[in-house]
Amino acid sequence: MIRACAVADLPEGESLRIDGPTPIAVFHTATGFYAIDDTCTHQDASLADGWLEGCFVECPLHAAQFDLRTGVPTCLPAKSPVRTYAVVVTDGVVLVDAPVPAVVGEGSAQLTA
Image 1 (spheres, rainbow, N blue to C red):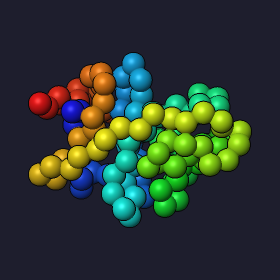
Image 2: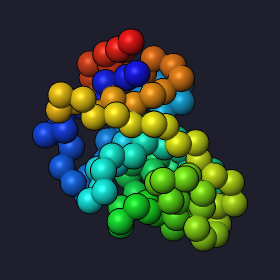
Image 3: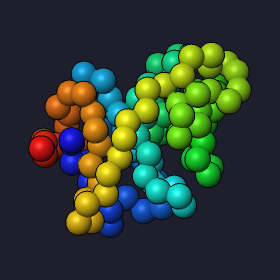
């Protein structure tokens, strides 16, 4: 598990990017926290920079939209889903079950067992 942030550091309606070999976007919605691959499957834009509405994020480049719960695109031009990651909140910390070590902002992400 990778430490993404403290719950208090990611207000509802906001997102952050975890840099690494496969960048990950973490979103805080009214229903909880979600993590997906940060790169749009249509044309390499950062989904963390997109527009969040409910459990959907709209790509800032060509307006493809993805369901944060499943990673499935809900409209064109994207046709392929993005990978989703399990998110756990423990003791006020948002943890992402990511496959590789990653870096959050300027500091190293903390790996937990």
